[in-house]
Amino acid sequence: MNNHITTAKYGPWALITGGTSGIGRALAEQLAEKGLNLVLVARRQQLLDKISAKIADKYQVEVRGLKADLSDVASVEYVKEATEKLEIGLFIPNAGVENHGEFVNGDMNKEMRLVQLNSVTPMQLAHHFGSKMKERGKGGIMFLATTIGYGGTPFFSHYAASKAYILALGEGLHYELKKYGVDVTVLSPGGTDTPMIENFGFDMKNLPMPMMTPEETATAGLKALGSKPSVIPGFQNNMMAFMSKHIMTRKANVSMAGKMMEKLMSPEKEQEQLERQEPQLETIEV
Ligand SMILES: NC(=O)c1ccc[n+]([C@@H]2O[C@H](COP(=O)([O-])OP(=O)(O)OC[C@H]3O[C@@H](n4cnc5c(N)ncnc54)[C@H](OP(=O)(O)O)[C@@H]3O)[C@@H](O)[C@H]2O)c1
Image 1 (cartoon, rainbow, N blue to C red):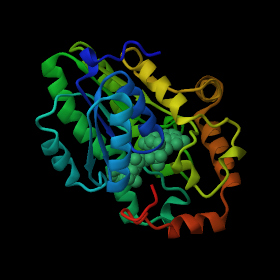
Image 2: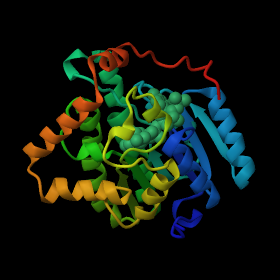
Image 3: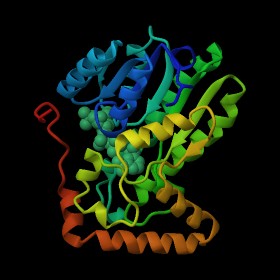
């Protein structure tokens, strides 16, 4: 599977942000299986150490864990410096967070950190690694968006907007960088069974689309790398996307998404989300 993923094209190093959990971890495993060395960036040191050692041992590749909070503006320079001596042939800005509830009730500091993590840091690092790949005439970038980033999504308005930015950026770069031998794809997952979903505080099983596994989502993304500007994994997610694009108006789409999200949410759940604290980074059980 995914035989086009080789160290010659995308190696010797792949950098995956958020490579310690969910989709990022599945991507890390699939790339290590292909022989790529990895730099995994995340905040929890213990988890980084544990996952890095596991993957290195299992696939006999080099794995380096880099502790950084990518919602912090200063982290971009830190990542650039820490990887200066490595040839990063594949860059996957996968780390992301969601916020939900009524936008105007949200905390502005959290919203600013969300857009830094989901949109600005990936853009800045794609500029950095992409220019080096252009010089080398090879490499790849795979961005992470979401199916709900294809249009306005009430109660996930800012999260969807941060991913719409990434979708547009990545699709444009797909064309710009193709002639230099650099592949760019945007992976837009639907519901995927990861810790992010567990933290939503409402039951995603109430959604019409079935959940995918992180491995399935990761495989679909890597399959599209080198051929498609963007990809939505899964048959049902694609059916929904087809209907949204070709059958329904934008107005109907927003209204349907709003009603669906309203059903999932309740004032109590919104309050829980507002009060949710960032995890205690060093004390989480790994
Ligand atoms: N799961 C879904 O249904 C779904 C659907 C559509 C799109 N996506 C997108 O797919 C991507 C991966 O999601 P996931 O569900 O796999 O997430 P996840 O399981 O919650 O994992 C998130 C990863 O990102 C890291 N991370 C989070 N905040 C960070 C920060 N500020 N700085 C550095 N690293 C950070 C986490 O490690 P630390 O906590 O240790 O930092 C972890 O490794 C995200 O961009 C998400 O928006 C997911």
